[in-house]
Amino acid sequence: MIKYDIKDSPLSVHGAPFWEEEKTLRRLPEKLMEELPNLSFFGRRCPGARVRFKTNSKNIRIRFELEKAEHDAGMSLFACLAANILVGDGKYGDFMGMICPPHYDETIADGVLEKSGDMENVTIHLPRNEIIKSFEVYIDDDAEILPADPYKYEKPVVYYGSSITEGGCCCNIINAYTSILSRHLDFDYINLGFSGNAKGEQQMADFIKELDMNVFVFDYDHNADSPEHLEATHEPFFKTIRKANPDLPVIMMTRPKNNYNDEEKQRREIVKRTYQNAVDSGDKNVYFIDGETFFGKADGNSCLIDGLHPNDLGFHRMAEKIEPLMKEILEG
Image (cartoon, rainbow, N blue to C red; front, side, top):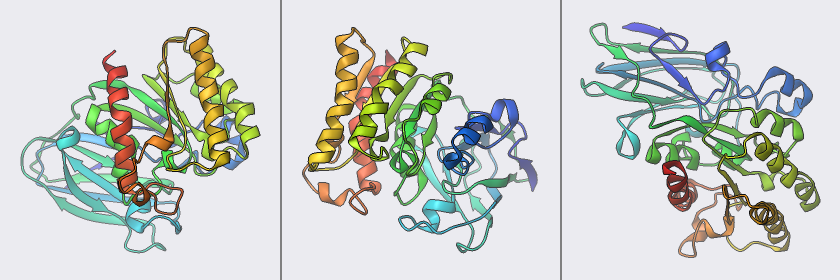
């Protein structure tokens, strides 16, 4: 078989903001990780990152190595450490399979998957939880490989938020709401979810404001230490983004959960106040989604794995709620 390193053309990498300049799989600049050392690990792992190409190979071998492998109490080996492979386009693409290490204490994954001999787009969703040390793709000797068809919307949607944004706790990364929306609406995206560590820091806002993005979505109220912390950071964070991007569509969301308690209602009002203040000031490109409406009443109690993180059903319902608004925004 013919080997392609992740850095080799015509493979393209998406969801890693520094890839084009540095060929580095990380989400945050080194300077920011030095200023916010709690993000030094999270900034180097890449939930939402994808490798894309087009091929008529009947067999695709994938081999990758992780720097380390650790247990995640809320997610399986398949959800944390696997590369998930989709063939075809959009919401009607086929799940080709997954490649992952055989055990939690192993860092190397190597396997071969079969597909038709048709020339098809292939999208490999990289492992969510760990830092990727190396990644290789192999195709049949007699096969052709081409660049993937471009996304309809190549300028990415950027998400900032908690472990939920990161994809916790769906059964595999392609079932995160961020991934579902990308497939359904055919857009590129950057996932800046940081499990337990999305605190609305000013340094993070200063980084995000410089990204070239199509839409910005933020929903970090889960990770704010208190309602007071959220109130002190949420509107300043938004204003930093807005000042640098006057026409950027911004979606604000609150945590996905039925039957908010009193503190969660207080947090919702803080987020909604940021939104309403923007609207009252004449901002026509800001949107609010109430997270208490994501799951609905029918089987809404089946949408969370631990009372906090959505499972696959929860993420699917989140995507269903967000998709019409995202579609309207993108189509402009």
